[in-house]
Image (cartoon, rainbow, N blue to C red):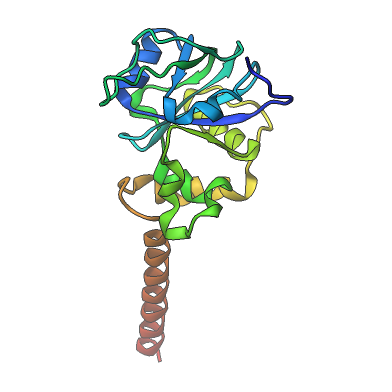
Length: 209
């Protein structure tokens, strides 16, 4: 039984294959693996769930928990260990669900999240290891607002993560990066470009003397 006294915000890390299975069932139920049993037992009604797809490095959906947690060993999802049935489950109601081609890029938003500050800056992807994570409400709201924006239903005046939102869309440069690029590469690009502009400006001044 779920015993949480307040709403908790979860990030659930899954594969594209397993997300497709969850999607095919209308996001009506979600299982958690045995390794995360202790966390799973804390999930309860009205908790929010954010889906991160590990093999696509993207945020795909949000949902709201509608039941207490329960145990069920019906085989639904895939795992390399045949004994794993993701038995710790809750019923859900989907909130925002994106197509695979529209996922919010984890390499764009990941480094800006409060949750990853516990890790060294160059090792922030470690924060996404494991299936189930409790994340700050601020991070959840920020990513969900991005999902809603892409989905075309962003709420008016919704600005849950203002100091980070500018870094996601500024100049469209970060959006053009491959998922393997680090945010530090963007800073280097800006630094080099700035030096080039200064050098060009000095050369133009000399030619006009």
